[in-house]
Length: 280
Image (tube, rainbow, N blue to C red; front, side):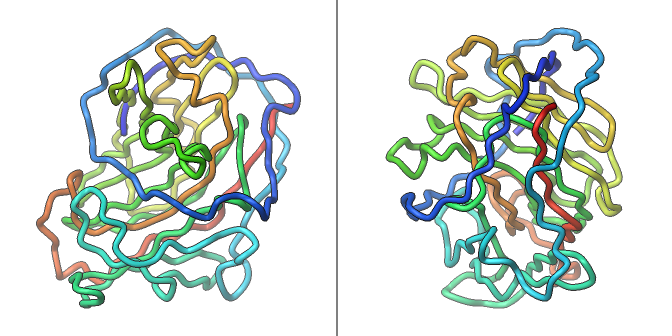
C-alpha cells in the first residue's frame, strides 16, 4: 500500500474487460498491511492528455448487489490479523449506492461482521482507467479498501507474485489515503506507493490510470503517485496481466491495529459507482 511518480502513454484498446464463466473460483484472500516502499522508481510525469471511453460500470442503481458483476467472499479469510467475519448480508444497495457495513456482532467466533466482494471470473481489467466514487467511514480499527489482484492468484500463483494494486486504502479516523502496488522481485515482496491527505468522510473519486508504461494514482483530479512498469522494470511483469476488482471493509488488522472504536459501529462504506474505461 503506498507511493510513486510517473508517466503514462496509452494506446488504443489496452483495457480488457471480460465476462467469464470458466475460471477457478478459488480466491486466496490477501490484503497486506503497510510496508516501507522497497523499490521506488520516480520521475516527473508529463501532462496526461489521453481521453477515455467507458467500457463497464456498476452504478448500483438496483436494489441488491448484481451477481453478474460481483462474488461475495464469506467467512474469516485468515489474513492480516483481521477480526471481521464476512457475510453477504452486510452489503446492500440503496439510494444509488453500494453500502458495505461493519457491525459489532459475533459470528463464527469473530467479534465483528462486514462484507467483501470481488469481480473475479466476471469483470477483468488489463490496462485503462479504473475508478470509484466512495465515501468512507471514520473510526479506530476500520480499514476500507478499493483494490485489485492479478488473476494469476486463481491459477496457482501465490501473493505477491500475482501482483496487487491498492487503488485506495484508508485506516482509522485520520485524513490519509494510501495508494500502493505489491509484487514479487527476486523472490521477495516489493511494494511502492504514496499517500495523500484528503477528507475521506466525504465522497471522492479514487482511481488509477494504468498502461504499458506506468500506473498512476489519483484522488479526484490530483495525481499523487506514479510507478513505472515499462519493460518489466524491477520485475513488474505481473502488472501486464489481467486483474480483478475488490471492495471490502475490514475491521482491525495489521494496518489499522487492533483497537476498534465500538462507538463508531455500525460503520458504512458508501460506493456510488465503479467504472472501467479504455484509452482512445
